[in-house]
Image (cartoon, rainbow, N blue to C red; front, side):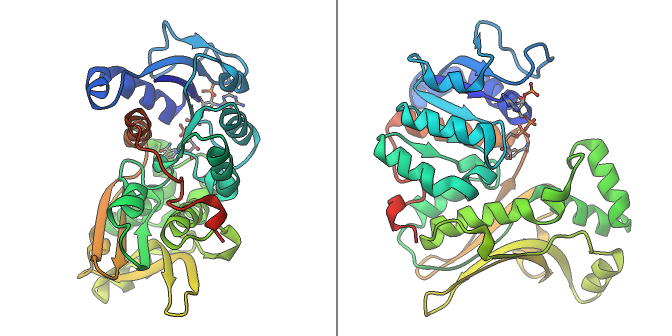
Length: 331
Ligand SMILES: NC(=O)c1ccc[n+]([C@@H]2O[C@H](COP(=O)([O-])OP(=O)(O)OC[C@H]3O[C@@H](n4cnc5c(N)ncnc54)[C@H](OP(=O)(O)O)[C@@H]3O)[C@@H](O)[C@H]2O)c1
């Protein structure tokens, strides 16, 4: 499989390192995978990966036009702009498209899934939710037999890290946020994370796969963790629990779906309360499976694991509808 990699930042560099480090293993498990072209903004930038011997392409959109590319991997970011243009161009030109971009999929996932079906290629975005944790695969495949009544999860590692450290160190929100930014666990502009927008994007994608609904950010009530104080955490602790930022989607007997992102009191007796630091977790209630909990690392280098798992699936010929059902069925 010949791969073009758009974006060589944190996730892009980790993806290239993984493909190079585990090349033999990946060839045994799927097919030989070769990155033939890369693109980013600044060719001269020092990178955390080795691009020698790989074609550098100045205009990222040119990656989608190359005859020697089977799969385009997008790790640039953004709900629209260059990421959307690249996705449309790649799918239209008959290339498989793999992305870690939750904002793109939450906003344009249905259109892109339709394009993938029309052009008979794969659209995959496992890395967009919960990093290395294979939540979409589990929902689409492992739990496919179930009618799912609810999902709830810790979907943003930055918020979980901040809340965990506030509690364990008895420090206030602003102090821990500033330190998290210094350590690289929070962005310079942290609003997408701490205001719950990142969690909402991921919840919209999960809800689409679970309930067969088109991702709809407007349908999600969103409240972040900016207003959470040390006093709130102490009060939760006194009552035998913790405050976690959760993404929750439920379907009632009448088939109505409710989606919300908000800080929630979780008793310590529930496993989700004990998922700390940068870890992500998702709890799923299925009618025959009962409760299932999956957890792991939700960001950074582990994200590359999910991207490459999507590549292995494509290499093996394991293809399927991006959201688990045909795009026209997403209402
Ligand atoms: N970081 C995480 O932990 C994580 C986890 C899960 C999903 N994701 C998703 O993965 C994607 C990438 O995240 P990241 O953290 O790797 O971002 P990042 O470190 O900011 O990297 C972005 C890359 O895109 C390149 N780029 C930006 N604008 C471009 C343009 N107009 N044309 C060509 N290249 C352009 C940048 O080029 P330069 O390097 O030259 O500036 C950089 O290499 C995002 O969608 C994000 O939501 C990230």
